[in-house]
Image 1 (tube, one colour):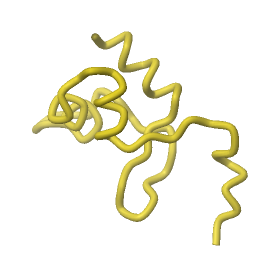
Image 2 (cartoon, helix red, strand yellow):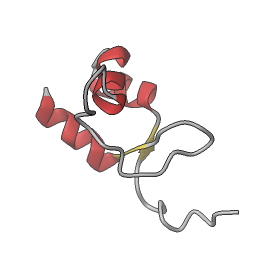
Image 3 (spheres, one colour):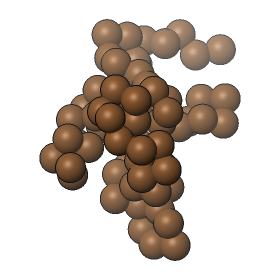
Length: 67
């Protein structure tokens, strides 16, 4: 079982949580993360956990630059 030390002290957000915080439609953020028939624009910094990608605080700042 992972000890969580690699994410300790880092903001960790699901795509829907990040979209809500950034006031961006979830579909748009998902297309940036997963690609929409093309390469993704945003690569999650953290490994997927339980089948869900996790975005870091740094990823959220990157999204602000995309807006």
